[in-house]
Length: 334
Image (cartoon, rainbow, N blue to C red; front, side, top):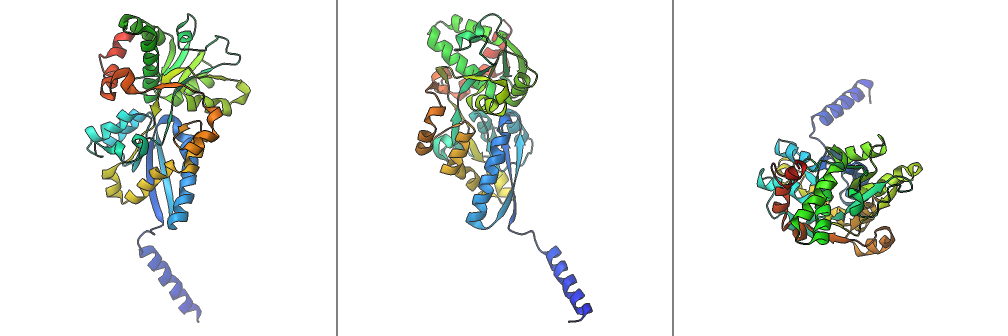
């Protein structure tokens, strides 16, 4: 073969490669997720990409978008073309059906456990030696105890904390609404900083050194202690708290437009696999897989977990608490 012939063949091969459509192996997925899930999904994406390539021979690029889940939902309504959402509040998924018509109203029935592959509860992180002696919800409203938590107006994390506190107060005070409101008002008054999201509150407590108690997910406080062993933070899990589900769904309109329906569904379904459930437990989330639960039983203390129905009757009622002029605004004006 002459040099000229070889050059022509090389040029022709290059032209064909450039003209060819993108390889079926070059696929992309966008996951819109909540603020404190960055490290979790960085690891899960690696796990899933290996699984997907083994199953299909295809490689995939997974992009992440993180912020408070309510902010993320608004971004999708405004045009963010996420293929899937992995949020920390049911209402932030519901809004995609109710306002955007992007998913069916029965989205929660498409995967097990109300499309919540994992869950958590609310807990307290205190400084070395627990100098304020924090053991329960009552201790949070003692004079001189400074709390750090996100703003319930912008953070699902904080709404869960508020509902957990409300559920505790309802158990303690029964039908005495004035006493329940007084407790919740005292709790809000103790908050030194309201950040916009859970990760901002973590930064305020850990890096800025503000506050005596951080109120956030059990998963987050345990992750903090692991990441900052020299600080000797202590975790306090109250005996009564809120069952915080983490709902996931495919965004039907977007995956149809992007041609990613099979990939998006597999991405969420794999969260229920034993290997993914072990990964989730490793990030201190409570999971549904019986075998993984048994393996981690000593890491998750028994807690009475109240659902939204027990506290507010429904998510619709609960969200009225945080709406303009609702119970939260009324308490903060007192």
